[in-house]
Image 1 (tube, rainbow, N blue to C red):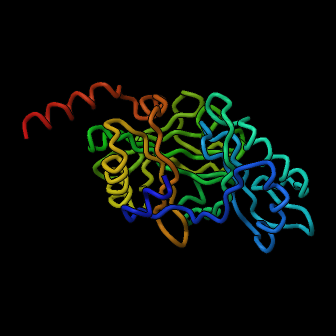
Image 2 (tube, rainbow, N blue to C red):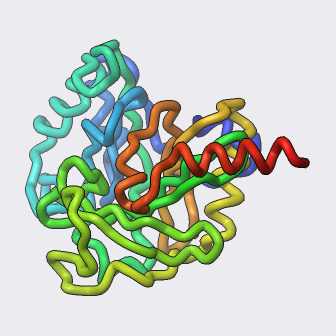
Length: 256
Protein backbone atom coordinates (compact mmCIF):
# COMPACT_ATOMS: atom_id res chain seq x y z
CA UNK A 1 0.00 0.00 0.00
CA UNK A 2 2.83 2.37 0.81
CA UNK A 3 4.48 1.67 -2.54
CA UNK A 4 1.21 2.32 -4.35
CA UNK A 5 0.76 5.61 -2.51
CA UNK A 6 4.24 6.73 -3.51
CA UNK A 7 3.30 6.05 -7.12
CA UNK A 8 0.08 8.08 -7.03
CA UNK A 9 1.42 10.88 -4.83
CA UNK A 10 -0.54 10.14 -1.64
CA UNK A 11 1.44 10.92 1.55
CA UNK A 12 1.86 8.16 4.14
CA UNK A 13 3.87 7.83 7.37
CA UNK A 14 7.57 7.33 6.60
CA UNK A 15 8.77 3.74 6.64
CA UNK A 16 12.00 3.29 8.61
CA UNK A 17 12.52 -0.47 8.35
CA UNK A 18 10.92 -3.83 7.57
CA UNK A 19 11.75 -6.88 9.70
CA UNK A 20 10.69 -9.89 7.67
CA UNK A 21 12.29 -12.87 9.43
CA UNK A 22 13.25 -14.01 12.92
CA UNK A 23 16.87 -14.16 11.78
CA UNK A 24 16.74 -10.38 11.28
CA UNK A 25 15.79 -9.69 14.91
CA UNK A 26 19.46 -9.35 15.84
CA UNK A 27 19.51 -6.17 13.72
CA UNK A 28 16.61 -4.57 15.60
CA UNK A 29 18.73 -2.67 18.17
CA UNK A 30 20.67 -1.05 15.32
CA UNK A 31 17.47 -0.23 13.40
CA UNK A 32 15.98 1.49 16.44
CA UNK A 33 19.16 3.21 17.61
CA UNK A 34 18.76 6.97 17.80
CA UNK A 35 14.99 6.89 17.30
CA UNK A 36 13.06 8.53 20.12
CA UNK A 37 9.62 7.70 18.76
CA UNK A 38 8.21 5.29 16.19
CA UNK A 39 5.43 2.77 15.53
CA UNK A 40 5.83 -0.97 15.04
CA UNK A 41 2.92 -2.65 13.25
CA UNK A 42 2.15 -5.87 11.38
CA UNK A 43 2.04 -5.64 7.60
CA UNK A 44 -1.01 -7.91 7.37
CA UNK A 45 -2.63 -7.03 10.68
CA UNK A 46 -6.36 -6.58 11.16
CA UNK A 47 -8.38 -4.29 13.40
CA UNK A 48 -5.38 -2.41 14.72
CA UNK A 49 -4.07 -5.49 16.52
CA UNK A 50 -0.35 -5.67 17.19
CA UNK A 51 0.35 -1.95 16.79
CA UNK A 52 2.99 -0.73 19.25
CA UNK A 53 3.39 3.05 19.62
CA UNK A 54 6.61 4.33 21.20
CA UNK A 55 6.62 8.01 22.15
CA UNK A 56 10.03 8.35 23.80
CA UNK A 57 12.92 6.83 25.75
CA UNK A 58 13.65 6.60 29.44
CA UNK A 59 17.26 5.48 29.62
CA UNK A 60 17.37 2.04 27.97
CA UNK A 61 13.58 1.66 28.21
CA UNK A 62 11.05 2.44 25.49
CA UNK A 63 8.04 4.53 26.59
CA UNK A 64 4.63 3.64 25.14
CA UNK A 65 1.85 6.14 24.48
CA UNK A 66 0.17 5.07 27.75
CA UNK A 67 3.33 5.61 29.83
CA UNK A 68 4.27 1.94 30.10
CA UNK A 69 8.01 1.18 29.94
CA UNK A 70 9.25 -1.67 27.76
CA UNK A 71 12.70 -3.20 27.72
CA UNK A 72 14.59 -3.86 24.50
CA UNK A 73 13.82 -7.55 24.97
CA UNK A 74 10.08 -6.90 25.26
CA UNK A 75 10.10 -4.86 22.05
CA UNK A 76 12.02 -7.63 20.32
CA UNK A 77 9.49 -10.18 21.57
CA UNK A 78 6.65 -8.08 20.16
CA UNK A 79 8.33 -7.96 16.76
CA UNK A 80 8.86 -11.71 16.93
CA UNK A 81 5.14 -12.21 17.61
CA UNK A 82 4.28 -10.11 14.55
CA UNK A 83 6.59 -12.16 12.32
CA UNK A 84 5.06 -15.38 13.68
CA UNK A 85 1.62 -14.19 12.52
CA UNK A 86 0.06 -13.64 15.93
CA UNK A 87 -1.78 -10.53 14.69
CA UNK A 88 -2.29 -11.35 11.00
CA UNK A 89 -5.39 -12.63 9.25
CA UNK A 90 -5.42 -16.41 9.36
CA UNK A 91 -2.27 -16.52 11.47
CA UNK A 92 -0.05 -16.29 8.39
CA UNK A 93 3.62 -15.38 8.78
CA UNK A 94 4.01 -11.63 8.62
CA UNK A 95 6.46 -8.74 8.49
CA UNK A 96 6.96 -6.03 11.11
CA UNK A 97 6.97 -2.45 9.83
CA UNK A 98 8.81 0.27 11.73
CA UNK A 99 7.16 3.57 10.80
CA UNK A 100 7.02 7.24 11.64
CA UNK A 101 4.85 8.04 14.65
CA UNK A 102 2.04 10.37 13.73
CA UNK A 103 1.79 13.40 16.02
CA UNK A 104 -1.90 14.35 15.97
CA UNK A 105 -2.94 17.78 14.74
CA UNK A 106 -3.54 20.18 17.63
CA UNK A 107 -7.22 20.41 16.66
CA UNK A 108 -7.80 16.93 18.14
CA UNK A 109 -6.26 17.59 21.56
CA UNK A 110 -9.54 18.26 23.41
CA UNK A 111 -11.51 15.40 21.88
CA UNK A 112 -8.97 12.59 21.99
CA UNK A 113 -7.21 10.75 24.82
CA UNK A 114 -3.50 9.84 24.45
CA UNK A 115 -3.70 8.11 21.08
CA UNK A 116 -4.24 9.30 17.51
CA UNK A 117 -7.70 9.98 16.10
CA UNK A 118 -8.36 8.83 12.57
CA UNK A 119 -10.95 9.28 9.85
CA UNK A 120 -12.61 6.32 8.14
CA UNK A 121 -14.16 7.04 4.73
CA UNK A 122 -16.22 4.39 2.96
CA UNK A 123 -15.77 4.83 -0.79
CA UNK A 124 -18.14 3.11 -3.21
CA UNK A 125 -17.48 3.20 -6.95
CA UNK A 126 -15.01 6.04 -6.33
CA UNK A 127 -17.65 8.11 -4.52
CA UNK A 128 -17.48 8.86 -0.78
CA UNK A 129 -20.50 7.14 0.77
CA UNK A 130 -20.06 7.61 4.52
CA UNK A 131 -17.44 8.80 6.98
CA UNK A 132 -16.69 8.83 10.68
CA UNK A 133 -14.09 10.20 13.05
CA UNK A 134 -12.71 7.69 15.56
CA UNK A 135 -11.54 9.14 18.85
CA UNK A 136 -9.38 7.25 21.38
CA UNK A 137 -10.45 7.14 25.02
CA UNK A 138 -8.95 5.93 28.27
CA UNK A 139 -11.10 2.80 27.98
CA UNK A 140 -9.79 2.05 24.47
CA UNK A 141 -6.21 2.35 25.70
CA UNK A 142 -5.54 5.28 23.40
CA UNK A 143 -6.55 3.26 20.34
CA UNK A 144 -9.01 4.49 17.71
CA UNK A 145 -10.91 1.21 17.83
CA UNK A 146 -14.66 1.32 18.47
CA UNK A 147 -14.79 -2.28 19.72
CA UNK A 148 -12.23 -1.41 22.42
CA UNK A 149 -14.13 1.67 23.61
CA UNK A 150 -13.22 4.51 21.23
CA UNK A 151 -15.84 7.06 20.17
CA UNK A 152 -17.25 6.95 16.67
CA UNK A 153 -18.52 10.31 15.39
CA UNK A 154 -20.42 10.49 12.12
CA UNK A 155 -19.10 13.14 9.72
CA UNK A 156 -21.21 15.11 7.26
CA UNK A 157 -19.65 14.53 3.85
CA UNK A 158 -20.46 18.00 2.57
CA UNK A 159 -19.10 20.03 5.49
CA UNK A 160 -16.70 17.81 7.44
CA UNK A 161 -18.64 18.49 10.65
CA UNK A 162 -19.40 15.71 13.14
CA UNK A 163 -23.17 15.31 13.43
CA UNK A 164 -23.60 12.67 16.14
CA UNK A 165 -21.43 10.30 18.15
CA UNK A 166 -21.61 6.94 19.86
CA UNK A 167 -19.64 5.20 22.59
CA UNK A 168 -20.19 1.47 22.91
CA UNK A 169 -23.10 1.91 20.45
CA UNK A 170 -24.84 4.45 22.70
CA UNK A 171 -25.30 8.09 21.81
CA UNK A 172 -22.92 10.55 23.45
CA UNK A 173 -22.12 14.22 23.00
CA UNK A 174 -18.98 14.61 25.10
CA UNK A 175 -15.66 12.84 25.38
CA UNK A 176 -15.68 10.79 28.61
CA UNK A 177 -12.10 11.77 29.55
CA UNK A 178 -11.77 15.38 28.41
CA UNK A 179 -15.40 16.50 28.73
CA UNK A 180 -15.19 18.32 25.40
CA UNK A 181 -18.07 18.19 22.92
CA UNK A 182 -17.52 15.72 20.07
CA UNK A 183 -20.50 16.94 18.05
CA UNK A 184 -20.11 19.91 15.73
CA UNK A 185 -16.34 19.41 15.43
CA UNK A 186 -14.89 20.39 12.06
CA UNK A 187 -12.40 17.82 10.75
CA UNK A 188 -9.33 19.68 9.46
CA UNK A 189 -8.27 19.22 5.83
CA UNK A 190 -11.66 17.71 5.00
CA UNK A 191 -11.62 18.30 1.20
CA UNK A 192 -8.11 16.83 1.00
CA UNK A 193 -9.15 13.77 3.01
CA UNK A 194 -12.07 13.08 0.67
CA UNK A 195 -9.88 13.49 -2.42
CA UNK A 196 -7.21 11.17 -0.98
CA UNK A 197 -9.87 8.55 -0.30
CA UNK A 198 -11.19 8.72 -3.87
CA UNK A 199 -7.69 8.45 -5.34
CA UNK A 200 -6.87 5.42 -3.20
CA UNK A 201 -10.12 3.75 -4.24
CA UNK A 202 -9.33 4.35 -7.90
CA UNK A 203 -5.73 3.16 -7.59
CA UNK A 204 -6.60 -0.06 -5.76
CA UNK A 205 -9.41 -0.89 -8.19
CA UNK A 206 -11.73 -1.83 -5.32
CA UNK A 207 -15.33 -0.76 -5.84
CA UNK A 208 -15.95 -0.79 -2.10
CA UNK A 209 -13.19 0.15 0.33
CA UNK A 210 -12.66 1.73 3.75
CA UNK A 211 -9.89 4.33 3.69
CA UNK A 212 -8.27 5.38 6.99
CA UNK A 213 -6.57 8.77 7.21
CA UNK A 214 -4.72 10.44 10.09
CA UNK A 215 -3.84 14.13 10.37
CA UNK A 216 -0.24 14.76 11.39
CA UNK A 217 0.66 18.03 13.08
CA UNK A 218 3.50 18.72 10.66
CA UNK A 219 2.56 16.91 7.46
CA UNK A 220 -1.25 17.13 7.39
CA UNK A 221 -3.37 14.20 6.12
CA UNK A 222 -1.55 10.86 5.77
CA UNK A 223 -2.99 7.61 4.51
CA UNK A 224 -2.91 5.02 7.27
CA UNK A 225 -4.40 2.04 5.45
CA UNK A 226 -7.12 0.81 3.10
CA UNK A 227 -9.50 -1.97 4.13
CA UNK A 228 -11.23 -4.33 1.71
CA UNK A 229 -13.69 -5.39 4.43
CA UNK A 230 -14.32 -2.37 6.67
CA UNK A 231 -16.62 -2.87 9.64
CA UNK A 232 -20.21 -1.65 9.62
CA UNK A 233 -20.18 0.28 12.92
CA UNK A 234 -19.91 3.42 10.80
CA UNK A 235 -23.67 3.11 10.29
CA UNK A 236 -24.30 3.44 14.02
CA UNK A 237 -21.98 6.43 14.26
CA UNK A 238 -23.94 8.17 11.50
CA UNK A 239 -27.38 6.96 12.55
CA UNK A 240 -28.21 5.83 9.01
CA UNK A 241 -27.96 2.60 7.05
CA UNK A 242 -25.20 2.28 4.51
CA UNK A 243 -27.28 0.43 1.90
CA UNK A 244 -29.42 3.51 1.26
CA UNK A 245 -26.30 5.58 0.58
CA UNK A 246 -24.98 2.96 -1.81
CA UNK A 247 -28.30 2.86 -3.67
CA UNK A 248 -28.23 6.64 -4.01
CA UNK A 249 -24.75 6.51 -5.53
CA UNK A 250 -25.85 3.81 -7.97
CA UNK A 251 -28.76 6.00 -9.06
CA UNK A 252 -26.51 9.05 -9.45
CA UNK A 253 -24.00 7.16 -11.57
CA UNK A 254 -26.75 5.67 -13.78
CA UNK A 255 -28.04 9.16 -14.52
CA UNK A 256 -24.62 10.46 -15.63
